Length: 292
Image (tube, one colour):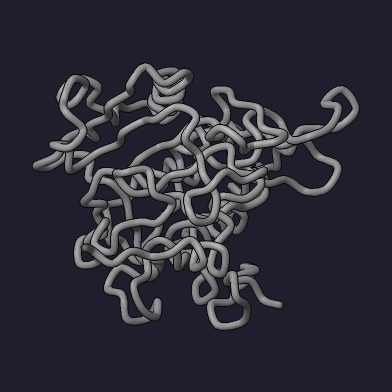
């Protein structure tokens, strides 16, 4: 049996199944009196969060120490183009799944998903792409959990990932992932299952590992918007840049707008603690990559 990364690693190294996977729509609270978190986009803000959620992030991309991985500090994602032009998906008539894919493709302005080639396939024969499942989101030990409203995991729905689910030498995802929408029976206390939750989980599957403000969480007093411009800008840049593009060569794109003053600064290249003096990231400072 293939070795798997356990959920314990997930809790130690990331927040993948925490707040953003707890609720489907806006965060708890009265949206009439709480402003929605929708920050002005700057190079530092987008670069910090791209770095945190994909380039430097440990789980689920690290098998050992981050520095030993060829893909560390580089773009990691599904191949879209080349020998695999689209990501095969099996929707299984899961509520909100098709709409979530529609919204992501419309926002990014490109087709990412192949919705036909594995649509009727026996799941035991599917080895690459995404399989959607309804009311199967689990917590530790694949058991019901109050906060588990959605999760992305192994083909069989396990919360763990298969050890060889991606190729560290190419940066490409190589295995099928299960996208679980809605809590399993007995779990999900305060969950709201809607298209926002589905979009959020698909973003995880596409390469956005860790949560950040605007993606899975929001600053205190501000309502969460699963489809704000910040997470979409991060996702856009993951798929704009070729896999294995190093942090030093990232040229951030702002298709959904950029802070006016920030946009006046020309000639920038690279993100992360060694390339942007304004970054909050510190690879060796804290457990989650943030300086403590």
